[in-house]
View 1 (tube, rainbow, N blue to C red):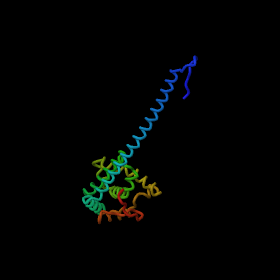
View 2: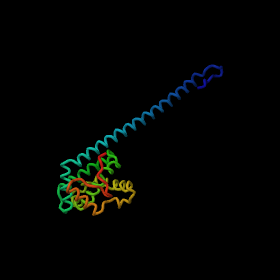
View 3: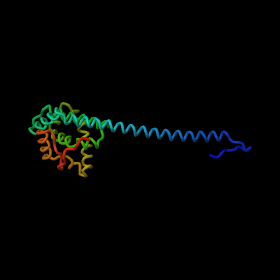
View 4: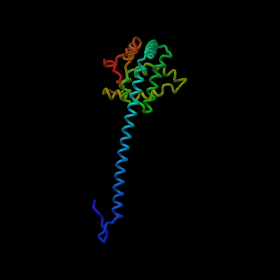
Length: 198
């Protein structure tokens, strides 16, 4: 830093003070930007970990004894074309996931990886039932509906397919429901085995 001198050859203390103030301001800005960046990264990590914990909780709930029974009964009801409260239980479960997804509390890619196939199969298998319920309760499973469009697009991109081909076929839905009815466990399409939880 060069020393500014006045006309008499003495130090120009006003200029030196202004230069020091500028240097202090620049340092303060650098510290502030660094702090904001670190806080943002820490917040993102906390939110990611909270979302991951939530996803593990949903996975445990999905594979719990009570839900396995509801899944089996819902699948049987859908295959037989007779509505039951078990279908509501399964759709409500996915609606909760969709709500958190739509609010940004869950990561779309992780939800898609972990739950897309069961969500898609139950969603498309239940369309007639959903329409019947929505005649009296138009908001029923609206979170699930909006999330399915986004998840289908993600799944299509992930598998390098069109959105239409990421939707399960009637045959795949029938096979899925049959597997759900018998054990609650199912293989995904393309002969993928069931994934280990995240």
